[in-house]
Image (cartoon, rainbow, N blue to C red; front, side):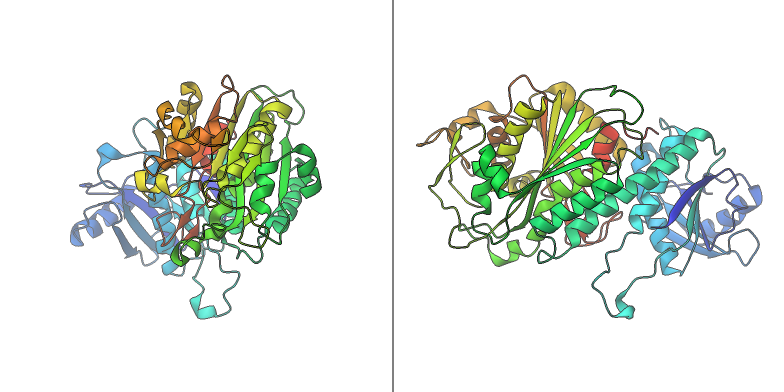
Amino acid sequence: MIRVRATGKDLSQVAADVAACFVFEGDREPRGIRDARLRKALAVEIASERFEGRRRDVLSWNADGTFGSRRFVIVGLGPERRASASAVREGSARAVRSAERLGARSVAIAPPSVKGESAASVARAAAEGALLGAYRFERYLTDPARKRATVAGTVEIAVDRASPAVSRAVSNAQVAARAVYLARDLVNEPPSVMNPSEMARRAREQARRSGLAVKVLGPAELRKLGAGALLAVARGSGQPARVVHLVYRPRGRRAGGPRTVLIGKGVTFDSGGLNLKPSPSMLNMKGDMAGAAAVLATMCSLRDLGCRTEVHALLGLTENMTGGSAFKPGDILETYSGKTVEVGNTDAEGRLVLCDLLAYAAKRLKPDRMVDVATLTGAVVVALGPACAGVFSRHAVLRDEILLAAERAGEKLWPMPMIEEYLDALQDGPADLRNVGERGGGAITAALFLGEFVPSGLPWAHLDIAGTAFLEKDSTVSPSGGTGAGVLTLLRWLGAGPD
C-alpha cells in the first residue's frame, strides 16, 4: 500500500510527479492553493480549455518544471452547494487514477475547504479517496500488459496547516484504507481458495497480528451448542462450517463504552442449495462472505485506531451447496434459540447462519448493542439499487448513529422499515417460523426473521449490503469486485479514529 502523509507546504512547493487540485463548478481558479502565481497559471488553463469543473471532469497540465511538481491535474467536484467530504473523497480517488495513467510514482493533493467540515475531516476524506482509488487485485494476472500502473511512493495531503489533528486524521485514513483493502482482498479471492477453513485460518492470522483474542469453533463444537440452522446450511458442502469469535479489548484502560457485538455472514460460496440459483446469478457468489470480511477487517483495525470500546465479533463461515446431504425445502430446523424454522427456500440461507449467531451472542456475550452485516437479499438491491445499502432497526438511536457514521464515511446507507404485519407471512406453517415470506418486501421480511432471534430490549441493527459489497464494473473509489462495503461505516460508528 502507498503511504499517505499530511504536509503544511503549499501545493506549489511540494515535489511530486503529479500534483492535484480541485475546482467547483463555475470556479475560475482552483481552491486550496496559496501561491498566487500557480493559481493564475492554472486559471489560464481552466479558461483556455473551457474547463467547467463538473463532477468527473479532469484536466491535465504540464508545468514544465516551473513549480515543485512537473505535472498538475485539476479535478472537478460539481456544484459547491452540494459539496461534502464525500465529494472530496471521490475527487481524490479520480486524481490518483489520473496520476496513475500519467505514470506517476508520487502524488500531492491539495483538498479544498468545505463548508461545515473541519480541516481534519476533509484531509481524512482526501487521504481515504487516494488510497481507495489506488487499490488493485492483480494476484492472479500473469500478463504484465494487463496490470495497471500504480502509484508506488507517497501521497502528500497539502493543507494550510498540518496540525496534530490533521496529521492524526490522515494517519487514521491509512489504517482505515488498509482495513478496506483486507476486506476487498478476502472477497476477491476465488471460492476454491477462500473456503470456510481458509477464511478461518486467515482470520486467526490477522487477529494475532492485530492483538485480538480469537477462538475458532468447528462442527463438533457447533453441534454441542445446538447451532442447528447454521449446520444445516453446511450439510451440502464437503467443507466443514466454522465460527470465528474475535475479541478486542482496549489496552491500558478499562473499556469506556458499551460492549458491542458485530456479526458477519460468511457464506464463502452460495450456489443457492437445492433451490439452485440461475447461472448468471451464481458467478459472483464468492462475494456472499462480504459481511464477514467487513467485520473481520473492522476488528483488525480497532487497536491501531485506539478504539476505547470492548468489541466482540462472530463470523459465520460455510458454503451453501447441493451435495447429497444438503438441506431441503420443507425441512424443519432446530435453532440455537430453541425456535424451529421451516425451510421454504434453501437460497434464503444467510438468515439461517445469522439467526444462530444472533441468539448465541445475545445469550452468551451479554452485549449492550449488536450489529450484523450481510449480503442478505436481492430485494434490497431492487429497493435501493447497487450503490446504497439498507439499515434495519427497531432502535432509533442505534439506527441514527449508524446512519451518521455512514454519512461521515462516505458510504450510502438508507433506513428501511420494520413493518411488523409482514411477520405474519413467516408464522404460517408447521414450525415457529418459515425462512421466507411473500415475494414483496423480501428485505423487510428477512430483517423481521432475524429480529425474532434478538431480545426485544437489546439494541440491534441489520445492515443488508447485498447491492454494495460487489461491483460488476469500476466505481470512483473501487475497481470491480469486492468493495469492502461497511468497513468505513463501522469504524466511524465505533469511534475508532476520530477526525
